[in-house]
Image (cartoon, rainbow, N blue to C red; front, top):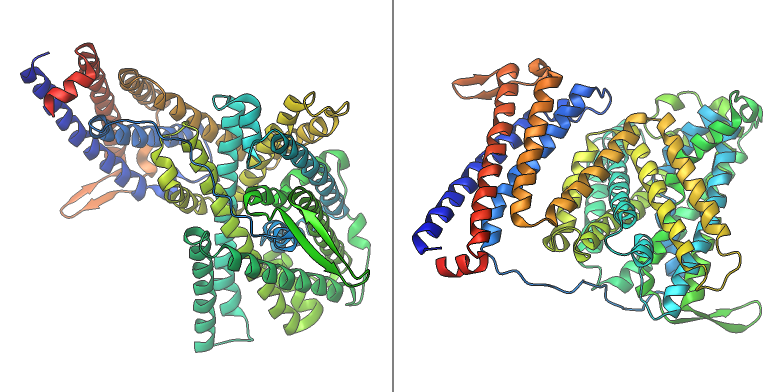
Length: 607
């Protein structure tokens, strides 16, 4: 292939890049103007679903076609998979505080009171079932961790267990890792929503602080939230010891406040068991549904596995009662801290649920309270209990949002390190995760709770069932019992989320399917990607036309001296999809010509 032909082809690709970028910007503007309509998950219809898929398909493929030519000029090289640094500095109590802090999160201040009101004794039974399931799950995690450790592998738990069991290319690994990314992002988004409920609704309407002092308090709490997030997200390695000590102090304070608040509620007369037996319905079915709904309060123990490289190899503690020192090795620290995290956190959750049920006849106005736990504290213990519950809530938010955000970034980064997504994802995983969290915030609290539960349960099912892969190697005759029990239970709890919100289940499946589609596209040959992109765009265009999407509900785009109506805007959007498919087809032809003529030689002759 002569230089003149190559220059013409590359000049054409420059024009294609410019056109694709223009279309990307136009689709982005379309999405921003109609954000509330496109992402309205409360009223899903076939046409709205097609519009959502069309928007994302056009946006992603326009961005891909924009970057295709610039990326082809770069020198490609392999990079080893990034692994975390080992810095063993955490002892038993700090590790335990991390687990409890991640489990006793801000959702309990809303979920437990509301659930007790709706389900009565079913709520308490569901908490017991979820606690028992988590306890068995912690044992499975520990068994698989020890197996890998004894075989010389430094494996950070969770989806990494699935990767080691079935390989990087396994669909099970992809689903478990992607589900955990979505679940932790949704949990972080939920924490943000209820945290701002505190700042914008609860504190301004309270009477213990008013005027200028109220504003100072609100901005002070917000500043603390941002400061703690920045320290953990960007300076974790530098201040890892200090972060651990602060985490321990916060956990002790929060747990002490919650236990004291429960004691106050129990001792506030009159007590009654009326609400325990107020539930009427299908007990078995409702326990399964409610357990899946409440499981968001019980999976925090696995955060301990994420910090296993920071656990000290041996910790020594002096026991005053026996006047002796005991040594605890790393493996025992991880096992005990996971089990105790589940036991302590579950005990606090269950005791609070029972306390709420026994005093609920005085809980007028709980249904309308933005954070019911504050209302209960005020009714039971007055202003002092109210203030202390707010302190516990702030700590719970700090110890839930930050781990959830970091875990989500870590899961997305792992997809890049494992070559499932581009390696650039490893550098900007926190950016993509933050953008995803901002988008999820718009979906609302109920949607976020449901998607967190469903995604976590599906991921945990695959993680626990992966233990079956090592049953023979671990030498356990009954090695299948615990993984099978937990795996089947978590799958069942996840499936019953459909009865809470079917659209959440459908949306979750759509997210996983779309992510896997992107993964397959990325791993195709360059020319095949362009042809595949063109085919997808044509199918999306035809589907949009034949389903007859009603664009009259779209918001008009108002440009100075130009007004674009919703109907014309919809036609313009369809036209952009059609143009984008033509661009993708032209790109395929050019890529195919370059490949035939020697791709690397073509680049060298041009540069």
